Length: 330
Image (cartoon, rainbow, N blue to C red):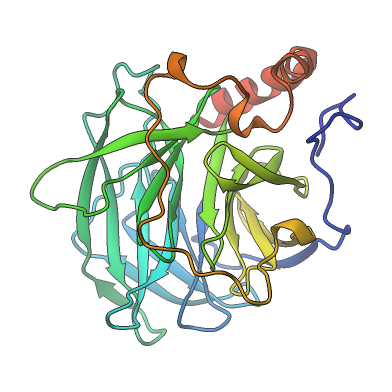
């Protein structure tokens, strides 16, 4: 929801025709901390999710009624702090690909401390919805500017490039190398700002834009630092996940907790795919931004002028977010 006193501020989140609706609630008692969402690219109606830290290395395939259709164990993976997932399609085979981000790092402190590296697991989507053990390819990453806590993971549907969004009071978007290596640690480089305390992110199916979720709202970007629109989100106990519907016309967003809900939120017209979306060239990618102090003037992805934003934060938003972060540790 919008912060108190910000209803008339430019860039303030507005509801997309108030058409949000409860899609389903997870019925599986094993799903207690749904922390990531991904719509299956090949199985109609299937949404994947996984638990936060403390669970084993597994993902759940859930149908439109909230019932688990299959549980997939990732046999060669470690679930240290799974925080996000994404889905794409392998252009060579047409098979769906699932990406699982073991990117949480509550020890990271402004580029100090924290894990020396984090991991993303790549899994070929199973052909059938039946319990099975899957094998993954593991890619290890480190940040060029030091350890970060992150909960956002997204993959560009055209280029296949992977991006990580850090969860901080001054977060950032990081791009992985165009070609990932398994024999060395890949370096994540900063390409733009993210809203404070980002909890998830996802690319639109046509690659024309992406969304970043926070505890209170979602921001849609044309490119890093270029805000397209902001979308108000339904009130959730602990907003942790976001993804696009298969047609790119709406967002799905979820929360942690037992029998937690997943909502469908329509996108404003400005953020919907065009009838004939222009082809995204594989060579198109954002340039890395150097140091934080060398950026062009502006507030990046926050969507409101910095003085007004921090005035609102001073009224209570920072306290609320800090309380949530302290309470959950995620």
